[in-house]
Length: 75
Image (tube, rainbow, N blue to C red):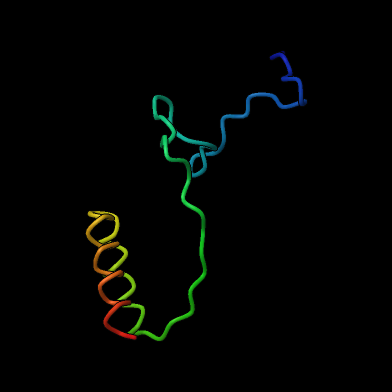
């Protein structure tokens, strides 16, 4: 019989579709995990948000400059 872990689990390898946890050999992102945020938007607004999010992930510094520029000119 296999030995129990300190919390009482045995052979906890998950199921076919759910292997539990990240894959072996992967490392955690040094910046940490992104926090979840909920945003309510209409469909046309959501398209803009998704486009901007993809831009932020590619070049966050440029997007920060664009936001600063827009804030200055909208007021």
